[in-house]
Image (cartoon, rainbow, N blue to C red; front, side, top):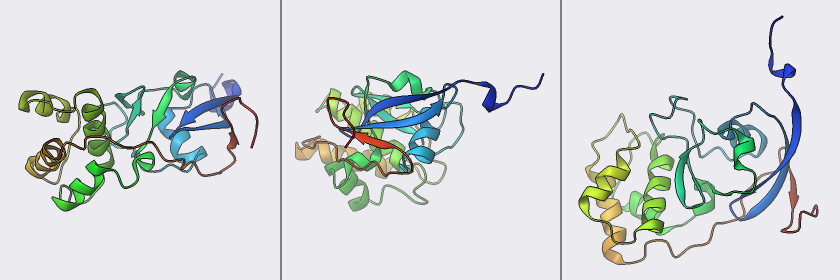
Length: 184
């Protein structure tokens, strides 16, 4: 017997993404990365290595950076998920632009997310901590100096994360609900 995706159970789940509760149908084997991109239209998290090495798919779950290519979507039920789209106009994003902390831009959302998570957990990290957190992501184009400069600029400015996630989930078949679970 050949096992296909249709063999796995399909269910409806509710996820809290960028401060908004959304409902969508998934297969129990669907990765969070694919649900974000294909079902919810949130394409900022990128498929890179699909084994957790590169960090291009990084999202924040309960204030921790997580590789969405390693998480099943059902593992994100009842969790607070923030994607790069939820950080629109954040200080860290602005500093990445101001310091040209990117070249091709493919890895940039992952670096922004891990930097934001670091600042949520430690608004004044030391150099060792910064390097440790940034080492969870890979950039194949640049050196990491400009990325570090962007992060240190935010640390020095003292405005680490004063931002609430934006409601940015696109429709693509997902149903939006309010905090009580009622459909909007």
